Length: 310
Image 1: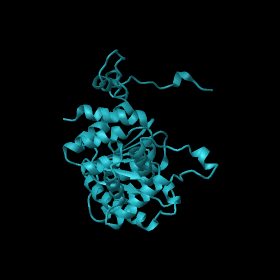
Image 2 (image 1 turned 90 degrees about the vertical axis):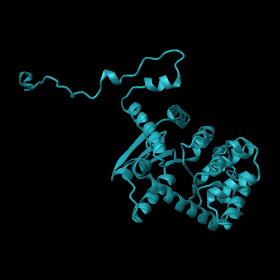
Image 3 (image 1 turned 60 degrees about the vertical axis):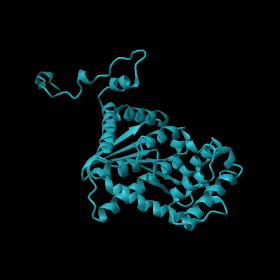
Image 4 (image 1 turned 90 degrees about the horizontal axis):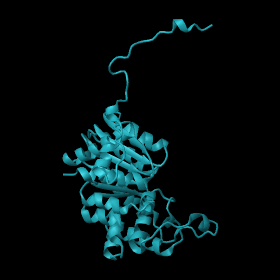
């Protein structure tokens, strides 16, 4: 039988507990400014991690180090282009990397101010992604630009600018190119709707994407000592591309360590957890994983950073 009289107890010492009242959230108040709201968050778990990421971004820019912003197309569909553009304008984002679907939604917003097809209803009829206007513009832009020696991202950016699309001020591709920051697009052949069309040129698309990969390697090698890599909503393509870019930079003899990475997504994903958060910073640095809806998390992060930019 268990004898409770033999149970060992102890008197707590200083440092025994991880949570202190000093780190508690401040109670909500009416008419509180964002800066005060941000300071009111608990300095515990993700509240502390968010502060760490904000500070890392600010430190990176103070030290003239890259802040690479990778994002999946869903982030654009969440209406966040205006937020991303402001971060580019304020020289906070210094490199923009998208997957192939990103240029599709970005173009549609730039040309008509709306995007996001109803996949379920279109798929049943075999019409999903068969928008001739979108495919013709992007496939022609890529073919012309890459033939002239441009990367895929710059090819699309040039076409958006040249044709003066009516809502190009909402395009993150246009803003990145106008601001002169590296703009890279990374495509997996067969994953994007424009690949279904007869004018799709796989060879030129691949060549343009490869040029962008080389550009990304150049940027990634600059992460050493306080750079930042943020990945919003890309679960496969961009985490894989980043891992290879980092590996290639190190293979070529560049020291790339002691930087910060963060993955933001709506659910926990294996590949970003490994390729963004854990593996890259093993030699030195720190990785963070945030779970939450993009339409809340990105404005929260952006406002917190902008409030502190000097």
